[in-house]
Length: 342
Ligand code: SF4
Image (cartoon, rainbow, N blue to C red; front, side):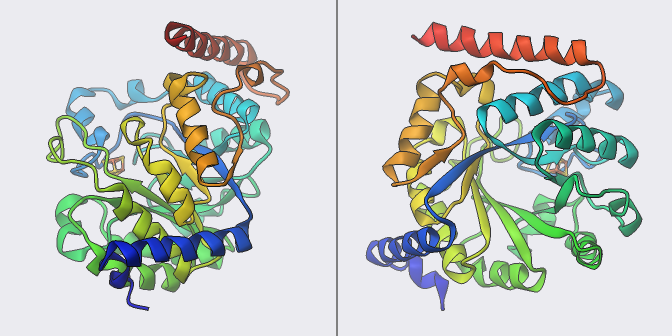
């Protein structure tokens, strides 16, 4: 199918979203999960992707070790996600912030906390690095970001595609799944869809996260608007129609919440990129759930039920007391924010 057809008229777009909706329900059922990436650090060795918040931070960070998060707060966040029923979208470190052994140890503890294997999104890994991991991961994520080849090199000068595809090859040899990230609104368009579709097929990608651009201050995109919600929905619908089993996660930002309903209709299995602590239990979290429900989907996990924040940390975590203290601080922040808005 020529997917640029989807964008030829509003009628074609609505018709494609309708077909994608039916197909999604048939293959995946009617639930949509809430997901959140766990960041290990605010440091990235590359630090030169033109859309990325981290690219604005690199010159401000003189000591990369100090930009690493405390592991106690990482584990507290994982426990919080378990309590509220969210998935860990992936573990993300920024290039060069941790050794691979450190990433493995943190990932194992996160697995013990959540009980679910997760994805790595920590840069390009060699075969021997991937071999260090076992059942705590599903697979590896390539930060592809865009497959509009005329702009990719300029936007991501430190992330050529070949090492990413080499990693996918190594992951396939080890029986690991492959995921990718894509950002819409960087200057690509519907004409780039065929390359994306070929790429997903060639590398047997089983999960894709489709973000819409979040224009960060200090980047060349600071004054760019995020792409239209219906463009993101159209891309998601095209991917759903082409790949019925693909897991599609859609990401937008707190100021783009009305995108959620339509991307769910278009075939998203999960949504991500929302600041948990700012939005949980208040009108923003309520809006997310309302959008998902308005699309005829069930919310997997909760963005509103504050009783779920309380619980017992069952996993055997290092520095337990510090993890419990960090959890307490997170919960207090959520409660303070939602009381302010009550
Ligand atoms: S490699 Fe990733 S974290 Fe680093 S600047 Fe690029 S997008 Fe940001």
